[in-house]
Length: 228
Ligand SMILES: [Zn+2]
Image 1 (cartoon, rainbow, N blue to C red):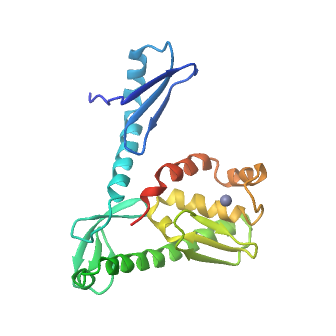
Image 2: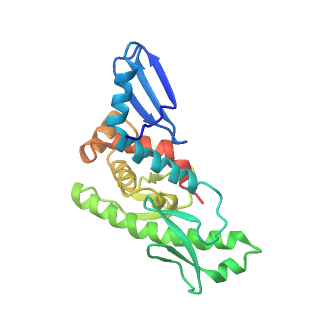
Image 3: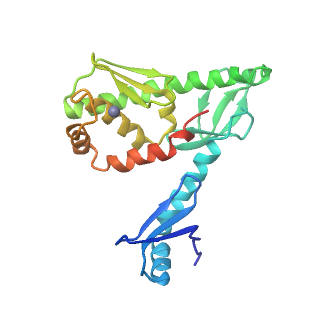
């Protein structure tokens, strides 16, 4: 049986044990003062599938955070999955099991920003397609009516909702897993009802997504990796 290493064990007056996989893929265990170490190791062993999954995701996101050079084999995120870039003679970006990327842009790479702009333009198109569809889905489900969906270049704001009912989303969101995209969609739609982050707002979100807190935490912890 493969042992999972506990990187940090924090003892305190708490009453329960909590496992957390951090952004750097380390495992932190928080436990009550007197919990026997053997019990903690057993729990970690029992939870190992979950821990491994979280570690893999953290590593993947850390990889994705490296500045891009647009070379063969480099990893790019799309809806929470990584795709290896493959330079091609084609003129347009295409997503198969790889990210097919036009060589022409690569060759004129005295200017790397050109490749980056091409990539961002593609992300924006996909973001508009995917997010519009999800907004329409949740709007049908809830009956909340919006005016339009726009894709922004916002770096720190994942989304916003204007008084007139226009929903804005950062193109960077298209790199996140689908359940995170859905969370932001529901979050902004709920702002049509409550233009604030009041208790009423959060309970509205919770009706649609009971696990919204976990999704929100994921975004806070991993959001910085959703970038080029
Ligand atoms: Zn909000």
